[in-house]
Image (cartoon, rainbow, N blue to C red; front, top):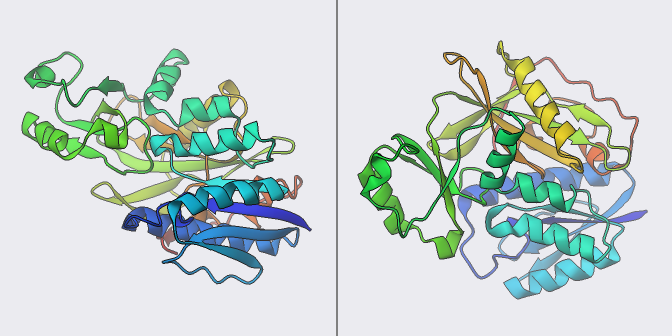
Length: 338
């Protein structure tokens, strides 16, 4: 059997000395549990992972290495990746964690089930991706870098910035550290609560009213064949992700697929699970706006695996290149902790 190392950053022990962020920990644990179960059920892999000492996985066929110090996690990551036939990294983009871990794997000739470095560099950087999308005429919100320390009251009168605005880390994951700014007072309050040296630089975008949607493409890392999921709706409470509803029918569904396919055709090297986030704006001329591309496993995996009897991990791990996915027509709702 092949040795598979699955590393989910939030739950891996990399934060063993810090409080676990509730929302991200729930999502991370849900994804880790699901993909471990699916990898074991392929019958192809011996699966191992590292796990924060405060968590419990307990899945038959999965060897867990308990981590009590964050420095120990990185050492064990390198050891297990080097000894494994394949490594699957599930990591957030913030602080370029995903990029740096995949770069280490590539530099050390460790096979991984993710995209090439050049694609991750573009997709995981919200400012770089927005510029890339604009150059390639892909509908996405205007995005600007902002210096929290030097921004002044001219924020409200600048030709670039008109309230309401959305502010988020340039390298971020999900809705972490995002905020809606309705006034200059909101901006200064946000600035007082966050510092660039802690979360990295921030970007701002105009707030666009719409329904948040997503779709995923499963790209087999062996032959790069594509399998598309149905379009789904994302549910949020404020900026906290609550799961979603799939499938979701709308008159611009074909446009979402068209935009996502254009990204894949223009950004070579994407592989594994690739998530696309959209805003559906039925009252605007441009009904479908692409928000971002996630070059990693996303929480929607939890919902889509309920929508089929096929093993989705078999595709993204390159086990079965001929596997055809049949999606149920039933509508389901899922939560991050399922």
